[in-house]
Length: 103
Image 1: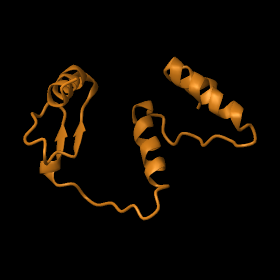
Image 2 (image 1 turned 120 degrees about the vertical axis):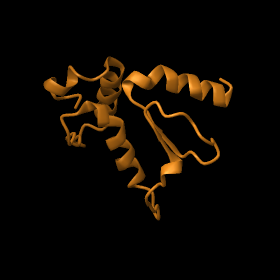
Image 3 (image 1 turned 60 degrees about the vertical axis):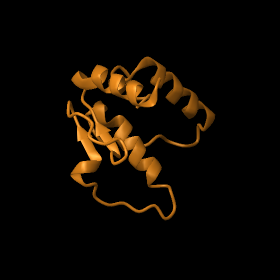
């Protein structure tokens, strides 16, 4: 992505610099092509690739009580595993995190 002029323009400047540094350290290794035109899922793809390298890691479905989405209010922090927020919910999400974790 950092070497491709079309995607390079869409990435955050700090990320481009980090990717360029990583690529410079390992010049004989070619980068993986990004599998989507949607840069909003960049972190998700990176997480999937990272988790895929953990030996013995298993996966399964999360129940509805474990996942909060968008502007839904938190139910019980003890049972929540994932909170998927959208760009318009970012301030509310960060505020809730700060309140729950005292930051």
